[in-house]
Amino acid sequence: MTDIGTILKEARKEKGLTLDDLQQTTKIQKRYLIAIEDGDFAALPGKFYVRAFIKQYAETVGIDPEELLVKLDEDNAPKPEEETEATTRTEAVKREEEKKTMSPILAGLIRYLPTIIIVVIVVAILGTIYIFAWGDRDRNSSTQIADNSQSVSVSSESSAKSSSSKEKSSSSESSSTSKKESSSTKAKKESKKATKQKITNTSAAGSAFVYDLENAPATNKIEMSVSDGATAWNAVSANGVQVWQGTLSADNATQTIKIPENTTTITLNLGNSKATSIKINGKKFDFLKENETLTVRTITLNVAQTTAQ
Image 1 (cartoon, rainbow, N blue to C red):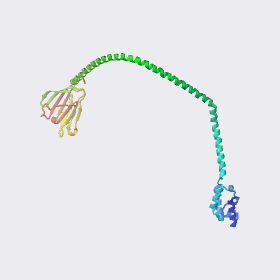
Image 2: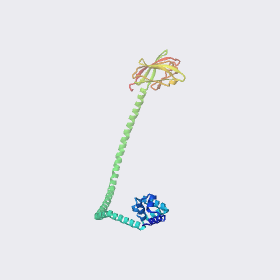
Image 3: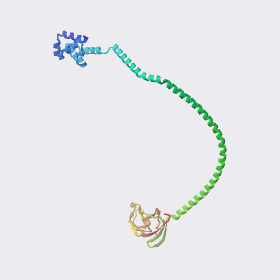
């Protein structure tokens, strides 16, 4: 019988209560009350019920339940000697497992140790042989370099002579090449001069003017614009067919008219020629020099295309 059971039983008797009276009051079965007084806590449903039943029993007989529960925890706590024995057994089991684990490894190392030693010795011998062989190779290579240096000095003299002769022939070739390039450049410049666009006035009758447009491309482009604050009605025809007509102002900026390919005659009808500026293929067309006082005029351009285009 444990101390807790004895304390509770004596308190019950002092109160003059029987187990039946205690069962009726606490609603705890009589067999559990007897187990508590006998200290047979294993007969109770579980640890939770052990603590609950002891607390309820103590409160009924007038004892502080907390003191009994503390004592219960102390009685159930493992003793240091038991912990030491359990720890010792655990460590012994671990050591046995480590021995079982390590023994195959050690056995394998011991088994192959002679082979490992032989391999190390063979590798050391081969390394020594390799070092000596490499040293002999370096000595042989240095001897060859010394011999080759003499032959290089002799060959360098002959190469210098051949180089001087090559330089002479190269200089003569470069001078002839430069002459060819200069003549080619002159030919290109003359070709550009020959293909430069040219506009020539051929006739003037009243407000009608005829010009020759020489060295023109296959497709010509006319750009028209007017001075600030002015307006001008203009029209453009190609081979007698009108391709554009409209009124230009400063707000309209520049009007660009693309003339159909291979057009031979371009006609410009200007309603306010004094305020109108014209560019043909990006070049300014100074048509006002032929009677700048005219306001309305008709300009005919006879297109002569260049063969270079």
